[in-house]
Image (cartoon, rainbow, N blue to C red; front, side, top):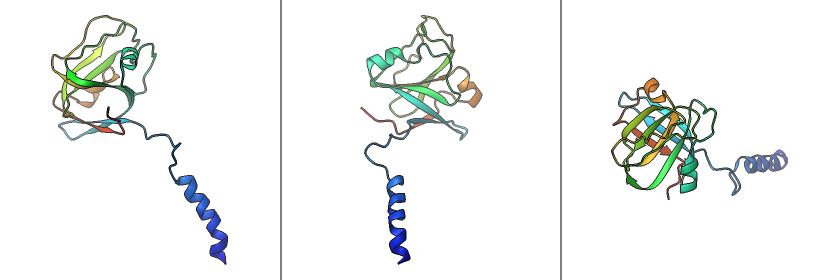
Length: 152
């Protein structure tokens, strides 16, 4: 008898905790893994198409300390970025197909049209606050792992 009374409450609890079709997708993250064994998670917004990549982080007055933007490209090639309408300094982490960091542009000055690239092909570029890489010891050759990042 007690089970019969408890069953509706138990079913309601299960339904509240179940992920339905309208549940938000888990947040996309990039975890930077240094050669020293440190793991640095970054919550990322995704720039997946030309319009999103062109806008990037322009006009932002701040970026949370553990947040960034991940640029996804269809092909690996040498990608270049400029900061004309970007208001905050950024570190740009260029990532190859294999998840290895191929180069870093540190603390790119805002509001400039200087082209920034690393001279090596990359498939992804992670932008974080300027100084983020130096503060965490992130270097070329380190690896990244993607979590909840949809592929093309």
